[in-house]
Image 1 (cartoon, rainbow, N blue to C red):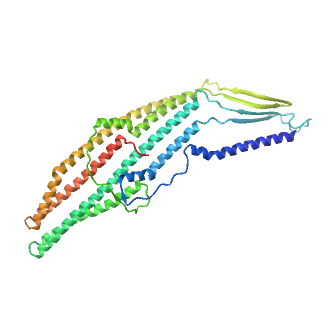
Image 2: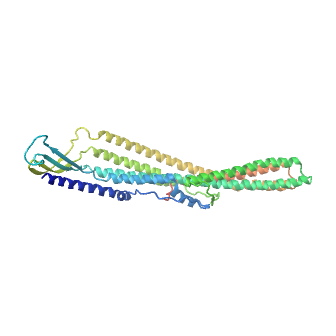
Image 3: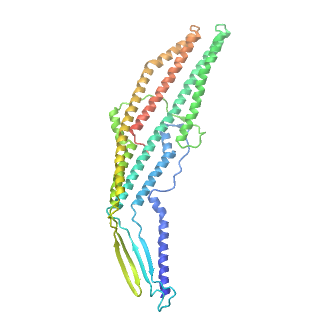
Length: 439
């Protein structure tokens, strides 16, 4: 009899071990269904001619902040999987009336009281559904935060990309001015040898050349450093990668009205969508906190052996919520809901302000560019050309020529800066409106 009971117990333990092994083997499949898996290795190659569109594609594949935000979405989906699971059943085994040093008739198990039972918690008041709904809202929040990370990263990429464009344009302009100035110096040296110019003029021109040479050196340094900053945000570790940018400084008119842009921003901004989802999640947590105050049922079913009597046993336990009905949790959840609602209102005000500020920035820079293109740049170029020709013929003194060269340099540098500022203002306006980024 005792051997038979031992074999029965061994068989049950074997069955239990088999169930545990099956559950362990199923974990990779469960993780795969939840979206958890090995990270995909992204490319680390930058083409020799980089467009802004291609740079955006590389950013979405390589940028560490975006990759980390994507894992937050995966983790949030795992929370949904956990929230939707049923509570595990509990297995209980009790033995009573064990003889100690007393001889008695029969087998060892004849005089024992054995109880084997299984308990299963049954959640009431829709707790499981409310908990799952809260977790699903968490997925919405993490997805919106991913889009917000992409929005900010794209604007940072555009700024760094056009830092390279600006540095490239500055290097080209400074090199052009330096080459033209070197021609004037060579011509003045010839005139000096012919006795038509003084040695003071030659020395003064060579001294003034330092200003234009410094511009070229600073522009070359700025181009190198801006390329490094661009490679960093692209997630490329090879800082020595050689590439060129395809875009140039251009001027594009913006025709949308601020009211329309504000309406689009309120509908599209990912951070605003994320805050709205946080409010909905807080409302769900409030409902779940109220449900936690309702008692759960714990039914059980088992086998009982009392001396020579074999019997089945079953029952149910129910806590009595006389004192703890999760009043503190409900109060905290209500406060969190109120805070999230005020944060949403503050975020809406921030979005409206940012749209109007960005629009004013674009408008102001557009007016400056129109004035520079229509009047100041052509005037500075004509004055420089006339001054060069007049000085080459000896009809203009050195001071007037240098003034014309400086005015041309400052006007062109200011024009390039205005184009750069307007382009960045355009990107900023698109960012604050919340263009739908590509995932």
